[in-house]
Length: 100
Length: 149
Image 1 (cartoon, each protein chain N blue to C red):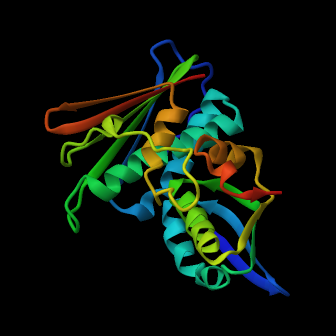
Image 2: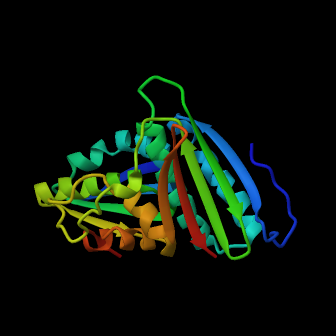
């Protein structure tokens, strides 16, 4: 699992590549601090190259979303595969995010 | 490690595959490999294989994180029986008694701020599998999960 964070104007984009399983989520939860610091702006989570997610990965998404809600920012999710979209649907996460 | 054979179709009694993990979260990726073998043997759809990988990971993660006292070594035994029309998983451990099927369902209608972080793992297992049952037998937790194929 790889996370690349880039910033352009008011938008911070995190590109997630690979499998966001339980051990990967432990690593990624340490990498997302810049996103939490930027939670008053726009955060884009680019999932085009993310092939799998477990509940520990969903936890990370929700942590970012809660920080944005608290600080008045936005979280936009891009590039969800149909399989991962299905996981978002099962857990009611589709309603919690702006999904492009 | 994962044993691969390619004799199709599965016999009526089922073809068994077996994996034993230690209670170390770093071993979770072995489940993906295990599931890949099962998927290729049963010829299941990629999406179904991914959701089964997810159910398996959630059930096993629960054992790895909570069944044994912190710092002690324990095992999780995963048995898969592949039949033509269904797949059965038996997950067992010798940790403290815990019935995941008794967990209450999360409220999926809550808004962002009210949504608790966590509590979705077992819910995913129950949503993905067609049936899930728990028994405590010979000092072991045994979780049986079935998916119709």
